[in-house]
Length: 427
Image (cartoon, rainbow, N blue to C red; front, side, top):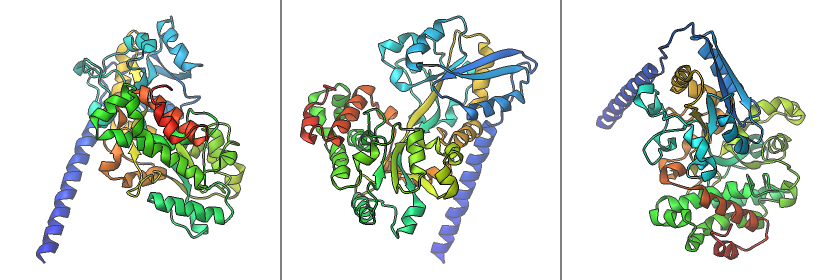
């Protein structure tokens, strides 16, 4: 009885804490306009998405408060190379997509110079609603970009196919190898598929990157060596590269089948929707396009199935949740109507709006109140000790390039694991 009483008391206390937390967050989510509601102006957002319906839905809600503010989104061609020129031009955008890899890159020094300090208290932006691990601070502790989406890495799983074949979704490395062997025996040529033609966004990097980051996460010295391209850091890639090599050599991945997929977005999704791929290796940015393409796949329309996005179980303890910003917004401090631009950012930065936008885009929300789309539900089960934020621990793009190219060459059979390790810092 004492145990039951304690359990009941704990449940009541937990409910109270959650309720208080929820009420606090709800209060933070109440947007109170601070400018003249009759203000007329134009706000432009530019990025590298072909379309952005989720953001346009935010525009509509903002217009409920400011009906005379025109908001629009435009895609810039060759975004990485044209953004700097556009920011210097006559028609300056108010808000633009930004990425952590821009930091410290001399090529983007002019872009960084246009970014407003979003942590300025006078702006009254609710940065507290965003997970601290996703917020990047510069050397002066300023925040010049805020995440609006988060991403991770894993595999789309056709759960109906697993049920049909009487198999369970694997949760450990040995289970993964065994289930792949079972699928092969049942006639599936490549139980795991993914984009494989180029190093960028290849399935090899999607497998290797989380394991490599996990090796560095708890060892500051190792991370420092890897960031500085010290040749000795190559050894920390071993487990990641062996995992890539193991999946291919054990018949989990058939590269000939994978090479028929011509991009890591639409073609990956449509191939998965054909219904005969148990697992499709990809990143969250690819998953974001699944909902929209369900109605574009004749195969899926004729034979729909249930699917979810799972961490790849790379160890006997399971997989990892690599929690990284997908898209970040920066405000152009030199734009017209800066005051209203910051008002829109104040509106957007809330649990309510960020969660809504993530749900529509089918990406992981960056908020502390992690409201997962059902397709991402398996990541909600990953324990804290297996959740890693590369930006928080200080991962730099220099080491990302090394594991991306090393895993690609090992996966393609161009070099051995030992050869790739010896080449660390040369990619």
